[in-house]
Image (tube, rainbow, N blue to C red; front, top):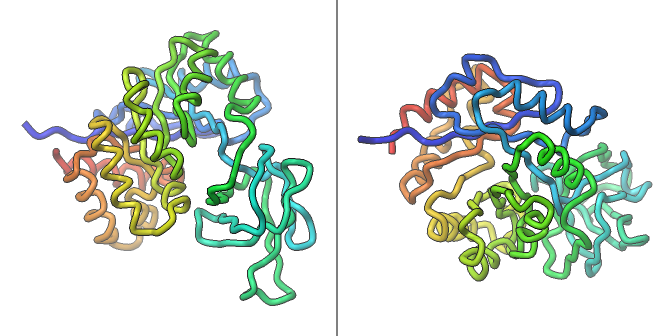
Length: 309
C-alpha cells in the first residue's frame, strides 16, 4: 500500500505549533533551531521545546561550522566579524541572502574579521547592511574553519544530555571526525548529518559507510547548491546522497510558493517534489519560513499527504 512521506518541521524561540499541526500523522520529528539567540538557560529552552511538541520526537539543530555575522555592519565602511576563525585565500567570493547576492572578501585579519568590497557592477554610493546572525557562504576550496562545534553547540549538548535528549542534526558535516566529536560529548547521540558542501559530498562518498549505523543523511539543498562548482551538479549530489542512504532526508526550498496563498502554487514545486520522490526520497524537512506560517504549512502538509509513495 502506498505510504505518505515523513515530514520534519522547524521550531524556534517565541513560536509554537497548534494542536492541529502536531496531530498530523505525517510529522515524525521537529527540530529546534539553535541559530536563534535566546537569553534563557539551555535546559529550560529544551524542556519547553519538548513540552510544546509532545508527543513528537525533538531534534536539536547544532550550527557547527556554519558561518554567521556576529555584529551588525555596513560594507564597504565596516568589517564583518564572524563566529569562527577562518583561513582562506583572498580575494574570494562571499555569498549571502541564500546565495542570491555576492560580494568580494579582500582580506581576513585577527582570524575572524573580513574586509569586504562590493563587486564592480555596484556604484560607488551603494552599501549593504548585514544584521547580527546573518549567514554567509565562502565556497572556496582553500577555506579552513578552525573549529567544528561552537560554544553554544556544546552548551546545548550538555543541556540535552541532562534531560535525556540525544537527537541531533549536525550542520556542515564534512568528515567522520565531525561525527566523532559529537559522539565524544554524547556517546548516545543519534545523528542526522546535514550535507551542505563539496567536502560534505566527499564524506558521503568516502567515509559515510564507516559511521552509517547511527548517522542518517540530509541533503541541505540551499547551502549545497551555493557551495557546488556548477549549478547543475546539484542533481548528481541529490542522487548520490539517496544512493548512499536510502533513508536520507531532503531539505531546503521545498514548496516555497505555498507561502503566497493568494496565488496558485508553482508547477515547479510539484515537479521538484515529484523528482525527489521518484529517485527515492521519503522524508522531507520543511523550511523555516513555511513553518512560521500555519496556514501555508497546513496547505503544504495537505499536498504531501496526497503525494503517496
